[in-house]
Length: 102
Image 1 (cartoon, rainbow, N blue to C red):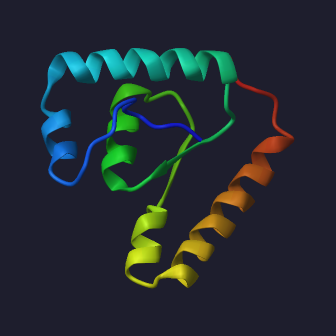
Image 2: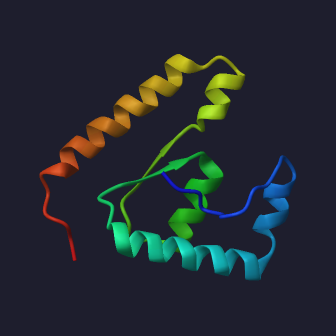
Image 3: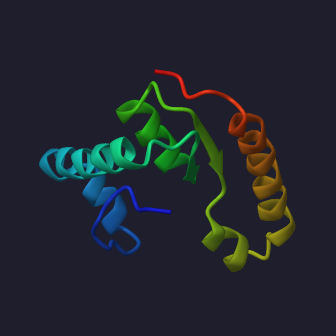
Protein backbone atom coordinates (compact mmCIF):
# COMPACT_ATOMS: atom_id res chain seq x y z
CA UNK A 1 0.00 0.00 0.00
CA UNK A 2 1.40 3.38 -0.97
CA UNK A 3 0.18 6.85 -1.78
CA UNK A 4 0.45 8.30 -5.26
CA UNK A 5 1.29 11.68 -3.74
CA UNK A 6 3.77 11.58 -0.89
CA UNK A 7 2.31 14.62 0.87
CA UNK A 8 -0.89 15.03 2.83
CA UNK A 9 -3.76 16.88 1.23
CA UNK A 10 -7.11 17.66 2.76
CA UNK A 11 -10.36 18.09 0.84
CA UNK A 12 -9.81 20.76 -1.83
CA UNK A 13 -6.05 20.33 -1.56
CA UNK A 14 -6.17 17.21 -3.74
CA UNK A 15 -7.56 19.08 -6.75
CA UNK A 16 -4.98 21.82 -6.22
CA UNK A 17 -2.12 19.31 -6.10
CA UNK A 18 -3.24 17.68 -9.33
CA UNK A 19 -2.86 21.03 -11.12
CA UNK A 20 0.77 21.55 -10.09
CA UNK A 21 2.92 20.13 -12.91
CA UNK A 22 6.23 20.04 -11.01
CA UNK A 23 4.66 18.33 -8.00
CA UNK A 24 2.97 15.82 -10.29
CA UNK A 25 6.25 14.97 -12.03
CA UNK A 26 8.12 14.62 -8.75
CA UNK A 27 5.56 12.26 -7.25
CA UNK A 28 5.30 10.26 -10.48
CA UNK A 29 9.06 9.66 -10.30
CA UNK A 30 8.87 8.53 -6.66
CA UNK A 31 6.09 6.11 -7.55
CA UNK A 32 7.93 4.88 -10.67
CA UNK A 33 10.89 3.99 -8.45
CA UNK A 34 8.64 2.15 -6.00
CA UNK A 35 7.08 0.15 -8.84
CA UNK A 36 10.49 -0.73 -10.28
CA UNK A 37 11.64 -2.01 -6.87
CA UNK A 38 8.49 -3.91 -5.91
CA UNK A 39 7.48 -5.07 -9.42
CA UNK A 40 3.82 -5.65 -8.55
CA UNK A 41 1.72 -8.05 -10.59
CA UNK A 42 -1.31 -5.83 -10.06
CA UNK A 43 -1.73 -2.23 -8.96
CA UNK A 44 -5.05 -1.46 -7.30
CA UNK A 45 -6.12 2.17 -7.35
CA UNK A 46 -8.42 3.45 -4.64
CA UNK A 47 -10.85 5.69 -6.48
CA UNK A 48 -11.46 6.90 -10.00
CA UNK A 49 -9.12 9.90 -9.84
CA UNK A 50 -6.21 7.71 -8.76
CA UNK A 51 -7.03 5.10 -11.40
CA UNK A 52 -7.10 7.75 -14.14
CA UNK A 53 -3.79 9.19 -13.00
CA UNK A 54 -2.09 5.78 -12.80
CA UNK A 55 -3.45 4.84 -16.22
CA UNK A 56 -1.88 7.98 -17.64
CA UNK A 57 1.45 7.60 -15.84
CA UNK A 58 1.89 3.83 -16.17
CA UNK A 59 -0.11 2.58 -19.16
CA UNK A 60 1.79 -0.74 -19.33
CA UNK A 61 1.05 -1.77 -15.73
CA UNK A 62 -1.88 -4.01 -14.85
CA UNK A 63 -4.36 -1.77 -13.05
CA UNK A 64 -7.59 -2.40 -11.21
CA UNK A 65 -9.80 -0.03 -9.28
CA UNK A 66 -11.79 -0.17 -6.07
CA UNK A 67 -13.74 2.49 -4.29
CA UNK A 68 -11.80 4.25 -1.55
CA UNK A 69 -12.27 2.74 1.91
CA UNK A 70 -13.11 6.17 3.36
CA UNK A 71 -16.19 6.25 1.09
CA UNK A 72 -17.30 2.89 2.45
CA UNK A 73 -16.87 4.00 6.04
CA UNK A 74 -18.29 7.50 5.64
CA UNK A 75 -21.41 6.43 3.72
CA UNK A 76 -21.92 2.95 5.23
CA UNK A 77 -21.09 1.01 2.05
CA UNK A 78 -19.14 -1.81 3.65
CA UNK A 79 -20.83 -4.48 1.53
CA UNK A 80 -19.89 -2.75 -1.73
CA UNK A 81 -16.32 -2.29 -0.54
CA UNK A 82 -16.14 -5.96 0.46
CA UNK A 83 -17.38 -6.91 -3.02
CA UNK A 84 -14.66 -4.73 -4.57
CA UNK A 85 -12.05 -6.46 -2.43
CA UNK A 86 -13.31 -9.94 -3.36
CA UNK A 87 -13.17 -9.02 -7.05
CA UNK A 88 -9.59 -7.73 -6.72
CA UNK A 89 -8.56 -10.83 -4.75
CA UNK A 90 -9.93 -13.03 -7.53
CA UNK A 91 -8.06 -10.99 -10.17
CA UNK A 92 -4.84 -11.25 -8.19
CA UNK A 93 -5.28 -14.98 -7.63
CA UNK A 94 -5.42 -15.47 -11.41
CA UNK A 95 -2.19 -13.49 -11.83
CA UNK A 96 -0.22 -15.25 -9.09
CA UNK A 97 0.49 -18.22 -11.29
CA UNK A 98 1.37 -16.10 -14.34
CA UNK A 99 4.94 -15.40 -15.33
CA UNK A 100 5.76 -11.72 -15.12
CA UNK A 101 5.72 -10.07 -18.52
CA UNK A 102 8.77 -8.24 -19.54
